[in-house]
Length: 290
Image 1 (cartoon, one colour):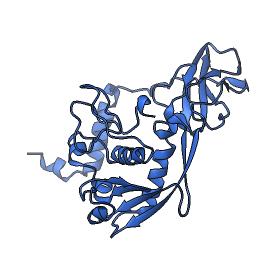
Image 2 (tube, rainbow, N blue to C red):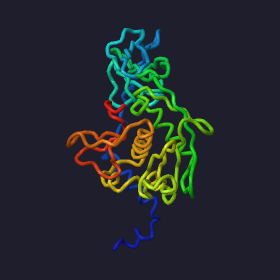
Image 3 (tube, helix red, strand yellow):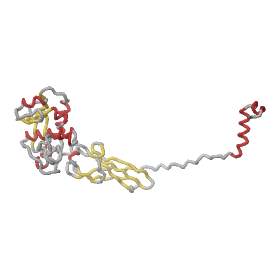
C-alpha cells in the first residue's frame, strides 16, 4: 500500500516526475529517410504505327512500329479486333480468320528504351475485313412465325442473319443471304412445336423441318437445344447456328449425311440433334459441304 502522503499527492505531477526520470534512458527514433521515386519519362512517338496487307480472310497483316524518340530498344505487339484484344495475337504478323470478317483490325505497339518507361501507340484501323469467297449466289428470305411464340422474334431474326453472315457458314461457299420484309426465295419460320405437322406429315413436333420454300425452326429446339446437344455440354448459341445452317442446307439442296469417322467434326448436314455416332458436335458446314 502507498504511504499516506503519496496517496494524497496529485497523480499528474507524480507521473510527470517519473517520466522526467526515465527520459535520459529513452531511445530517440529518427524518421526513416524516404528514397526518392524516379519516374521514367515515356518515349515520344514521332510517326504512328501502321498496318500493311489486304483486309480479307486468309490474308496476312503486317505491323510497322512507327518512329520513336529516343530509339526503341524493345518492342511488343498486340492485335485488336474492333477495339478488343485478339486472344494470342501478339506477333508482328497476323493471319485474318473467319472471326475477323466484318471487323476492323488495328495493332497496339508498346516500346521502351533504357531510362524510359514502356510507351504505347495504336495504328489506324483497317477497312472491314472481307470474306475470302466472292459472292457467287444471292439469296433473299423473309421471316415469319406460326403458332404461339414464347420467345423473342427480334432475337430470332438477328441471330439467324448472324448465322448467314458468318464466314464459317454457307457464306464461305459464296452464298449471300439478305432478309427482305416479305416473300423472298424462301421463308424462315419460327414455329411452335405443335404446329410442325401442319407443314407436312413428315414433320415432327420434336424436331425442326424443311418443306418446300419453308425452313422451319421448332421453337422448343430454338429455346432449349436438344437432349443430345445438351448432354455434350455445347452452348445454346452454337445449337442455333447448327439448326439454322442444317435446315437451310436442305433448302440449298443438301441431304442428310453420316459421321465421316470417330472423333472427326460432324458435317452440318448430319442429324446432330439426335446424336453423333462418334463424331464431334459442329455447327458449321464442312469445306466439302459448301
